[in-house]
Length: 118
Image (tube, rainbow, N blue to C red; front, side):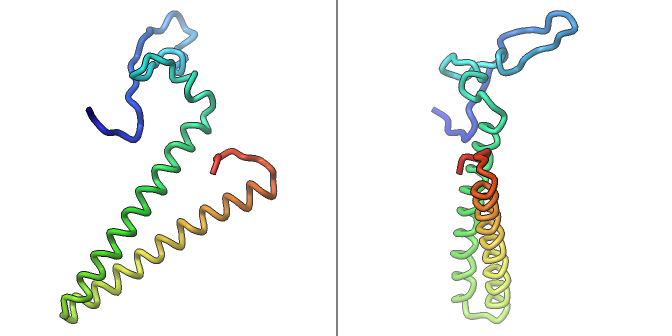
């Protein structure tokens, strides 16, 4: 059993003529359902990617703060300077994530459009 954030897909058709291929109808997921049935709009895939990026960024910020704390208590001046830099970087990343989330919320409320599904 493998773990992945994005489901695997399998190609099940070929191009006929110049019309091309509708990948949503050709690709199937592990359970046999078509990709176009599960992800009916392109915003569904964007939502999946954005949510996973926010989770991954949160985990990275948490790890940076833990490592910065460890470096800070190492009791060397170089370790304390590196820890301060790591904490600043983590806080800037958190502020950027927080701002991006709330900007999307403000746009959603002011326009009444729910594209990102947060």
